[in-house]
Length: 219
Image (cartoon, rainbow, N blue to C red):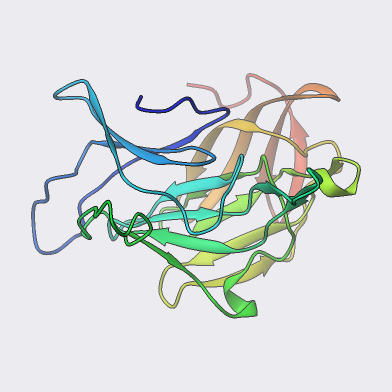
């Protein structure tokens, strides 16, 4: 990479449904605290892609079906070094050419309360569901004694709005969830959680989050 990144977040870029074909499919967006880079597996090289509008450490990142990338939440620091968490969302558009004179040109910050996360959070996870929406959940609030976040949000790219998921996760889940498996139009389970409370697996079935075995339904 061109820069050193602490806890970067990544997403594999996709082409929009139309027009067919694009130059960025399969490349990897690497979101660091200060810079954003693109990794090209064909050339094994990184290139500069500017910077997010808001400086973010450990945000959620998810590729959308229309080719854009959702970036949200994360953590920043004030002038005194105190951490604060973010609830804002921004979108990265690979179709906009990178311009060094305008390093944030590819990013657009969403405005309006209905286009923000319901809870400020960092270290969360975002996964695109089969209907194109994005589930955002987990994480912590660093400015609040590293309190674990139970709330879940659904981001709808049609209108770029956020809906609060009425079913919250159990209190044990707060930090990174590394593997997410989906069933049709619903999140079926989340596995691979490892944090201060130990390791566990969790699922979403019948309108509630519940603890499952580590091997249940594994393939």
